Image (cartoon, rainbow over all chains, first blue to last red; front, top):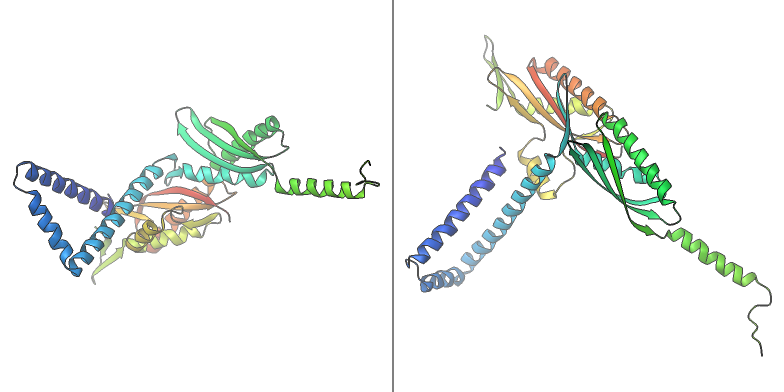
Length: 202
Length: 117
C-alpha cells in the first residue's frame, strides 16, 4: 500500500475517533458549551493562533483532496484489460482504449465530437459512444461505418479476440459553420445579381 | 528492502530500486511507439507529489532476490499495443540482466493511455 494511502487512512481514522470522543464527552456533560466558547475565543484572540488555524484548515483541505484523488485514481486504474506474455502481464487501461477511440473522430470528417465509454465484462468489450455529427451526414451509413472502424481498430491495436459490442448514441447534429457561411454568401450573391430587383409596385 | 544487495571479497554491492527503475524506464522509451513512461495526465498536485516522492515504475525484490517490475506506459497512437508491450518487456529484461545481473521474475506493463506521436 502506498505511503500516502496509509497516511490518508490513518488521518481519517484519527479524525473520526476524535469526533466520536468529542461527542461522547459532550454527551456525558464533561464538556460544557461555555468551555467550547472559551476555547474558540482563545483561538481567535491572537494573530498567531488564527494563522495556525487557517493553515491547518488549508492543510486539511489539501490532504482530503489528494486522498480523494489517489482513491479515485486507484479505482480508475483497476479498470483494465489484461493478458499474459512470457515476460509477465500486460494490462491496458480502459481509458487508453477510450483515448484510442477518441482519435477516430479525426479520421471521420462527419463526426464533430466523440465521447467514448469503454466497459470490459464477461460478454466482452462494450463501447458506448456519444457522438455529435456535422449536418448533412447520413446517420445509418455513418454510424455503421463508425462501428466497423472502431471494431477493426480495437482488434488491430489491442490484438484481442473477445467480442466487441459498439453502441452509438447520436446526441446532437451540429451545423457546420463553414456550410452556414457558404450558404449565406451564396444567398447574398444570388440576390445582388438578380436584375430589376428592389422595385416595388406603385 | 529498498536495495538489491550482493557481496564479494571486497565488500557489498548495493543497487538501489531507483537504479532498476531508471534502467527499465530508459529501456522502455527506446522502443518505437512508446510515447513516455508514466501515467496518463491527472491532477497536477497529485502528479507533482507522486513524481517527487515515488518512482512511476514500481520495483519489488523478494527474498530470493527476484525482481518484479511494473511499468506504466503511454503509447503513441497507431501502434499495436500487445506488440509494443512485448517489446518493452523484452528490452527491459535484456537491459536489466545486462546491466545488473539481476534475476528478473516478472515485468508487468500497464498501458495507461494513448497519445498522438
